[in-house]
Image (cartoon, rainbow, N blue to C red):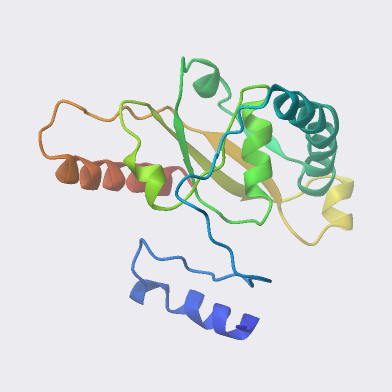
Length: 187
C-alpha cells in the first residue's frame, strides 16, 4: 500500500509523467477483475426501476443540497448539454474527489454512465462535452466560515470529431490536443 507522501511526490513531478498514466493510485482494498462478458448495463427492468428510484429520488437530491452547502456549486453552460441529441462523451479536469458527482448534477435527468480509461477513447461519431471545474473565493458569510474555495462547473461548447479522416490515430491526437488546449484556456 502506498502512502500519501508518495502520491504528493508524484504530483510534484507531474511533467515527468506520461499524460495517459494515472497520476494518483488509490488504495485498493481487494483485487478487482472484470470478466470480458461482464454486463455493464444490466438489462433487468426491476434493476433499472430500483436504481432510478435510488439515484433520482435519494442520491440526486442529497448531492444537490450537499454540493450547494459545501461548495456553493454553480453550473454554467447547461444549454451545451441540453442541445445534444443522442450520446456524448464528457471530458473534465478532475480536481476534487466529488467532481464526478458534480458532473452528474450538471446532466440533470439525462442518463449518464461513468467510464474511464482506454475504452472511453474508442467511442466515435458522438460530440465531446468539455467540463471545467474552476474555483472562486467564497462571498458573504461563507468567506468567514470556509477555508476552501467554492466551485463553478463550466460546461463548454461540444467539440465534434471529424470522422471522415482516414487516419484515426492522427485524428485522435489532434482531438486530444484540441480538447486539452480549450480546457486549459477556459480554466
